[in-house]
Length: 547
Image (cartoon, rainbow, N blue to C red; front, side, top):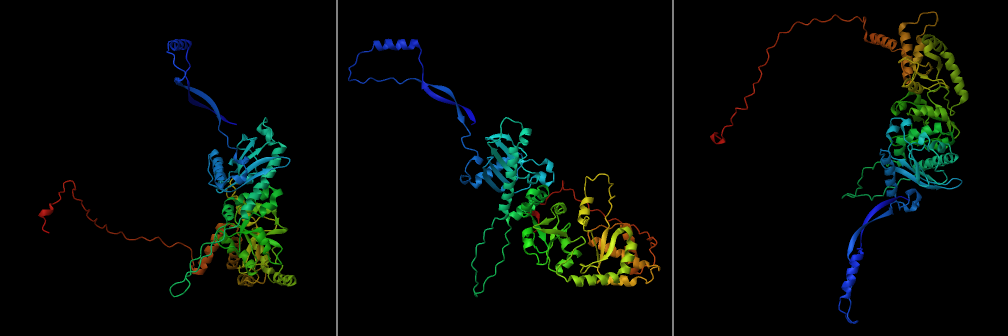
């Protein structure tokens, strides 16, 4: 208990000394005797003020986590959350949701955990090392630490308190950190935090009130504007904290399956800013023949939807998940599957569709490979180390060619992320070795067919420069469509210059002679307008004016 010393002033009878008592007795002896029937009037005692000191207990109310949760209002929970935020010198808005529980068993403790509605500043900047752990640790209601490491780094945004009666009071923080009791408490707190997030994701939206249709004077139903669709509170929260959940799938293999069910993604079938799909929903609406979860990592949703990689999936009405966060590449590399379905990057080789006739596909591929063998052989010789190999594609729709990554190599998006590393050592700026991808040709595209026909029958015959430029431009198109940068911008500019020269019919690129325009006569300057002297300006009398 915490007590406060309080000073109070009270009225008490004034104490008399011995001399005053003797004088009063003499006065009483000289008094006239009165009969018993007469009332004796007693004198009122003289009073004086005396200061007293008392101790009053100021924490008579129990701690909020020690009270019954059914007796605590939402406003009290929010007020306590604001207290936790103010104590750290930061404010994160109101709490999105919370859980209040008593853990009973071998280890007993009480706790309140909060989900913030706003991202802490350190987390916004990606400075996980500067994130303050948001849990306060109490032992028998005595504060041990307000920054105790009770949550993993992917749940560092969780705020709250933990109060245990099983922990010792007379140990230092380092010893307490290694306590087996603390490890058990951590495990239970993580499970409760994930359960809190899951409950938020399953919260049902209130149904819209049905409105009666209004009818005009002619009896026609008045069509009202559709109200905007309500956004689920979990989607609003996930947009801010989704990266932390993906980090948890990497850092916490024990809870990987639970965390994956909380992830949300954009896909080729989602529309609108607030429409997302979960992995469970994706698997539930997969085609019967589909055995893998198709993913497409990249920079923006717009670029991914318009990419040539999507042609075959759009034609087959196959949903593809769009991964636009930088952490998605690391997440897929570590997790690799969900519910027994492997993730398949559509920008890599080896993408197959089980809905087609395998025997027919093999026969077609054999014929195309044999037909375009002179072209693939020549292109590999022309490109050299700029490509790993040149093959005939089985999945391209409208694009003439595209550059894909090897099945076990890094995607173009991952290469972009690696080149953007700010703390990469041992590599000079711009000295990145660009990967050599696999060039896939579309055997049905007229560009590819025409390029095959343009090759001389004799391999020893020199190929015209225009055909070489066309082949290089085809590679440039395929490279940019695959998400890779141009390997040699100078050569690319030279090729485009030759193409423009040919299309415009320009014979020479020599610059025209510089012009020598005649000298122009100096035009007289316009006279400047002199402003009147406003200081000596007198306003005429209105009565003298002839109106």
